[in-house]
Image 1 (cartoon, helix red, strand yellow):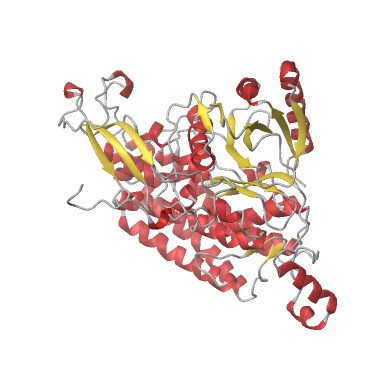
Image 2 (spheres, each protein chain N blue to C red):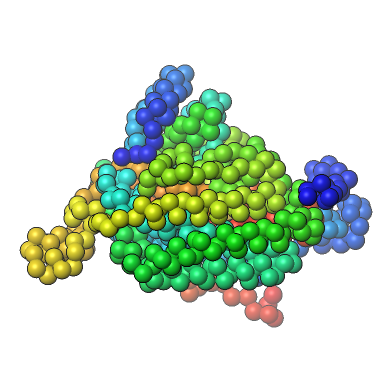
Length: 425
Length: 176
């Protein structure tokens, strides 16, 4: 099939650095590339529909060729890291939702795991399995939307609507599980906020049985589509060395041929017991990123099904009540539990936290989501640093965009899946 | 209870000790924090030591950040501590490098010549703590507005701000 399609032709232009630069800010307009080295400065975003949020890029254009690209971020800066210095660990979990509203479950669980590693807490198997299911569903929600939007930005509107239907089903599942659709706040240090309701499990199973057909359909719609291929193959190429140097992680890194996945390399929540592949592509272009996301969704479906098979009744929270809240019935009837409840919830009390610096990372749908917690021994962390995958992924945009056409910028932006909440925090 | 495997920790520790021994005059302190090998280095030697790590195979700069020790019960040697977390894909090992930076002269050399990731990591560090990275090609604020007058993650900056939110400069159409 692939042989029928022509490879994109090189523009034949000299690389950006070889051309004489006009002063940035010079407003002279050239209609043809390279005429007199005159360039035009164009402000793209922050309210352009293709920026999906609040990204602003200042472009220096030579005709339609992007000569320089200066991304400007921070429009959604909310001070989450500062807020983290005034909230207990469990309170901060609600903040992690707001960082990545596409896959809030992964952020909740990622932060809870970082805290548990700091507190040296063992988590019961049921909680681990529920976390795996929710993380993988979050991954599907994130990737399917990204793929849909990538198609929409290139003109295939129906793919976006199909992906929204699936996302809607996933949000219904999240709502049944946690009460929240976007901001789930489902993880807790030591386990989960609630047990998984029984009637959700058939619903998840039903979703997982039907979603592969949708993924196949999206693939059929796009992978042989002439327009989609012309606009993604060879577009926005990120070389492997540049990706590693920029600290790019996740699907973007795996699209450049580096098989790094923290679920496999530093397993958490029992990922080492699941059978899954880490898909890798070598081209590093928009099409490779698209293929990686499709493949990862299929793996996510397989992992979730394996986890559902192993789900057994049991405790969903660590039984160490110096950290996790005791059962509400026990709080009303047992003195011991009442004391634990009091000690955990009152300001100035809380779990015993060791002093020191702790770094822990999990594989969120966008890449390595790391947490550096500096603890002074109180229940409120002294410093919480988020290592946001979108931030470092987005820092490499100039490499992908410079020297290409301005319309390719749209194709590149939608293939990165930049979440502005996480980018700007 | 870190998820770093023992073998990876041993490799990281070995490299940290080897690099530390090459810089005898720097008196590098190799230790462990939360399961990660740490190297506490003087700030003048931070970049040569990071470069030695880069040469030893640490090709991925995970993060550059800092913390302010102003309100810690046991303050560090200086007010700010800059952190570089580096990872080696080939060796599969992670090292956490730290350097103390004094309040009256908050500057340290840039690592952006070694890793491109430091370009944005250091900009954010400057934006939030006012730590200047000498040799950085484009050290501007990145998340806060350009004309913001303070460094918000410093511990003496209040959580609710100093009224910047209500006092943004207003530019009207006829004055623009």
